[in-house]
Length: 296
Image 1 (cartoon, rainbow, N blue to C red):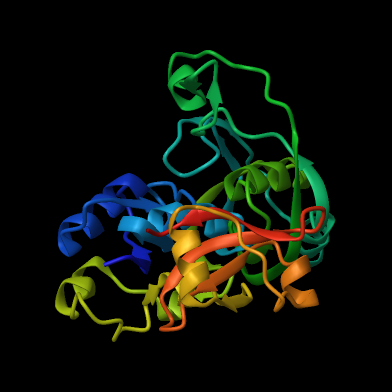
Image 2: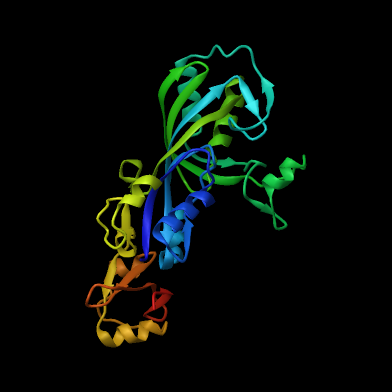
């Protein structure tokens, strides 16, 4: 069973714990997730099972979409509701126009400094472990892209917004920075990840529902075969001779390399009986398809 599960992660458990639940339910040998959600967050967590763990990087690089609730007037050390209050503001008399202007100012490509309370590592140690000891490490700002950000609801001190952003964007840091710009301070109060690429919250499954479904068949819209999960990648079907070469990790040549395949980031390579053999990519200088991942 090599599948990808669009899991609706419950609140107050880590992404690692969520993966462990899926692994236990499906009696899988291996499982991993494609994109961490903090314990306080809920929503889409893609869990890759068994051989599908080798595809995690394809999903983690996709854009994410969130529904977030920001609370004005209070800043915390973790930039979310689980942190220690470090600053308060009594005057949070901002209006809708001000909020919308600040949201808009963070649209597009910007630089964002990762928070200390994060899983990023410094000399092999997660930053959050250093932060708990009161140690602050200089973090290099990283470029992020927020392709969509819009106000959904506005009832002070709470502001609800939707954001679609690139990999590596911290929504709690976004809230913290918006609070600074408004002059009120702010922290992330609630967070739901509503999509990763084309994987949406409406199609996700809870751990409880996962127990009820048939394990061996992809009868649930929340469970994908490896090939279906990579729906945006073009396909190349090969004959038996090429299939044998691929099983040993050897590159192949083909007269059926279209312009689409030549320029694709990756290619799904299938046998004549529709089995996914590998993920490869075309090397124009050698005019071959090189195998990056082989499912022997």
